[in-house]
Length: 309
Ligand code: NAP
Image 1 (cartoon, rainbow, N blue to C red):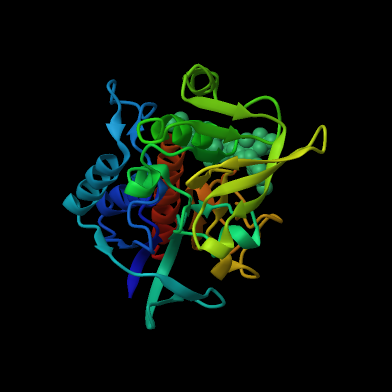
Image 2: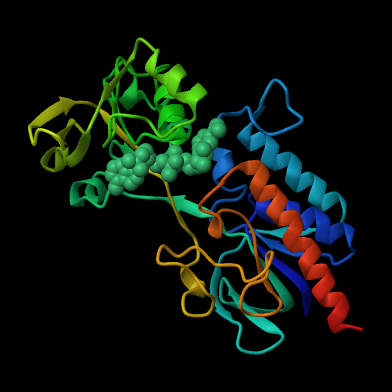
């Protein structure tokens, strides 16, 4: 039986792994479908303390994993399909196998929010993408006009990154001010290749009949006017949804699926802890996720110590 199973290998999961490993709990750390988490899809991370020149998101996660493994964490590729939290030990079903554990740290992060358009789903990977760092350099986007949807830090980061490849990058945002941090917003709006399209939403991605992206239809929310923008790619960067579906009905969550901690990182089920973006919709930073991962590890360690007294 495991003492601690950590679900997720983003900043929260791997920091929890470092701490529980150093407490000799030899945690089992499950990667899910995105080893390293969302940060691996970012280019340069400029706000993680300790890296004055910035650090590549992928490299940061590789370093965290190595650090955790150095102290005995066992990182395993695997996805949790189901959880039984009704009795102790808890049981997780991981790729069909039952994994019993005394404690669980959920650090499953969040995935990309979708626009919810039928054309978006039909053209995914045919010009519609959720990650500029992953797909921006594809030949289909080179020297072509591109559209980024969103007004947060992610949208700004994606738009700026895409200026390396696209001819023009249209930033379609539903309001007339960016939500992004000041530094990112200024950098984005001052870029000669980036053209903001304010107060507008994408109502359709064209062209499903051609089975590839050729443009978007946008609607101005203030005037109601509709227009079309020709483009070869649509990069959707409108935020995230927590990866907590399997715990629905088992743990207290808000209406968007974020786990609501009871105290610190404790959930409503004693022995189950939560950390990072799957429970935090306020800060959502690499460094806060790491901090919460540390807290969850300490909480789990203290819980186990009490249990075995
Ligand atoms: P976010 O801050 O939640 O921004 C989402 C954006 O998408 C908002 O501008 C929102 O519009 C828009 N939006 C949401 N739903 C929409 C819909 N259905 N249709 C059209 N637009 C929609 O998300 P994020 O940019 O992914 O950032 C998440 C967190 O990560 C933030 O805390 C951010 O600071 C952090 N982050 C940091 C960095 C960095 O520092 N390098 C990079 C990326 C992300 P409204 O503004 O109108 O709500």
